[in-house]
Amino acid sequence: MKTATKVALGMMLGAAALCAQAQTYPAKPVRFIIPFPPGGPTDIMGRLAAQRLTEAWGVQVVADNRAGAGGNIGSEICAKSPPDGYTICMMTVAQSISPSIYPKLGFDPLKDFAPVTLMATLPSLLMVHPSLPVKNVKDLVALAKAKPAILTYASTGNGTSPHMLMEMFKWMAGVNLVHVPYKGASPAMIDQISGQIDVAFSTAIAALPFVQQGKVRAIAVSTKDRFPPLPDLPTVEQGGVKGFDGSSWQGVVMPAGTPRDMVAKANAELAKMLKSPDMKEKILQQGGIASGNSPEEFTAFIKNEIDKWAKVAKAAKVRVE
Image (cartoon, rainbow, N blue to C red; front, side, top):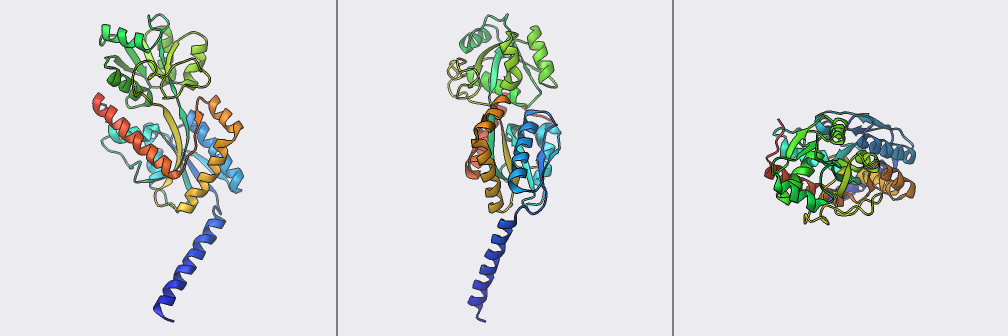
């Protein structure tokens, strides 16, 4: 047999094997790594995705919570898993912030993952205590400039989304607020309700009940678009901080090197899920806006997020040892 014929035959056999693999995938249970504890928004979103894939594929897609270090432990486990299609993982805004604030990180969010799709964005509300003479963003900026380094703001810890959002606000608005880090959203909210904290960004899902009860005053939403449950609440940009746009977000990735047909299969199923009215409503109830995009679009989104938070981290000198 001539060499050219052998090469052609080999290519045909290889293509046939790949086609058969794509048709039979997945042929066994799939691990779905969620790098945060059970019960939080990332866990809820991840379990919705795992359930959808289980139903669509006819094999068990098993949620596996691997929490720690702001999601970095589970993300590193994901990055080092075999790229055979049998590991799927949640990725969040935290992993786009981590390269800029952790001197040693066990993964590269661009090189070590094959992005599947952006699941949802989660707007945050900019809130003040009702006793503060602030009705909107312009009032807050004016008060902060009149009282530099006097007003306090809460976060859920150094390098977390609420911290980075406020540091971006300080940088872009040209104000100086005092950071008070907490070990979670609940203690931070308790102190803001009591008046010990002046201002904070908090995810809409966590803050909305207290806003509706009048215990805190929402003056803006963090994203470029308004939040549907609060249509009269302006964005931070509409309040006068030009270009401000930030949110938490959640997406799905697989280890780098996972065959493209497997990535595409996961993307197609999750896209169907995110387009369904009932799922959009479920996600909205969790304080999120359903998204869904192509692997290429999600890759570009992650890169933009990494670049954005790198600028904020540099301006604010944020580092986590």
